[in-house]
Image (cartoon, rainbow, N blue to C red; front, side, top):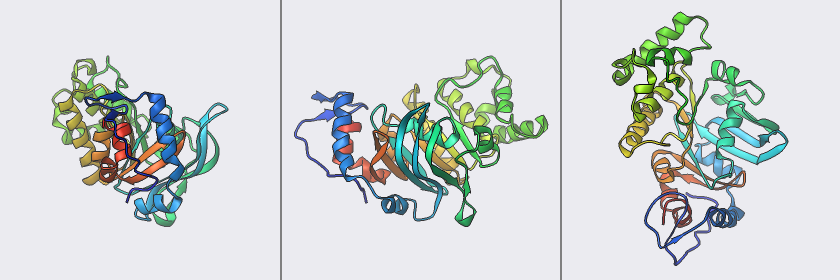
Amino acid sequence: MVVGDDRTKNSKRASGYHTGSVDTVISVDDVTREAQKIAEHAPSKEDIANLARNNPYVIIDNLRAGYGKMEILHDFNLQVGKKQSLCLIGPNGAGKSTILHSIFGFTTIFSGQIRIGEGDNKRDVTKLTSSEKLSRAGVAYILQDKSIFPGMTVEENLWMGGYLKETPAEAKEAAEKIFEKYSRLAERRSHPARVLSGGERRLLEISRALVMEPEVLLVDEPSIGLEPRFIDMVFEILDDLQNSEGKTIIMVEQNAKKGLEFADIGYVLVSGEVAIAGPGKELLENPAVGRLFLGG
């Protein structure tokens, strides 16, 4: 069930920030204003817990966070279960990437808590450094496009993903497991990363994060800059990581339609708060979400 939605009707055919032919184009400011009206019926903590099947693996509790002295997230709450995926959408400046940054340790935390783990073994990771979150809490951040080292070979890029391993031999062993899983990379292991196609580069970025064998993947704009055929490939890879390997995925995705088709849970963010939350497929059918973010 979608929560936080008044399902307001609009007689004009219009678009938010995605794609599609339109009769009327809504500006970013208009999207934000309309979304703020929806946020008046924001989901409760109980609603958010229900979407995580009341068995969350990642919990954000009343988080206030931002950059320097600027607060972006305001008493923000999030829950996602083991082997679940969550897609964050919303207008520019809503705080989507700030959530990923906060989980991984790139922001100033003013108050609140971030916990990761199963059952009673959840661990407070709020104050851990990014390196500690990767090595000790199993949280990996897959950055936006162009984060590879173009002058290094594919193999060397994977070794870099294991920089927190105790020995270089462990990093190399983990890289070999990646090559066994993805023959496309194995065939190009000695090639400089700069010659890879857009889809291959994205696969390398994802694979480099897997070298540390994380349990939680923070994925920032997986489809950015990719041709449609490569977008499908990337989401197939993420689907395999979630459903075959049991990874928990929290994603920011500008291609709202693709992200919500993929994700178990969707949150619509407005001004650092959750305005709407629900199963991804239900948000796709939500008229307000469609009008503002899906192109009609």
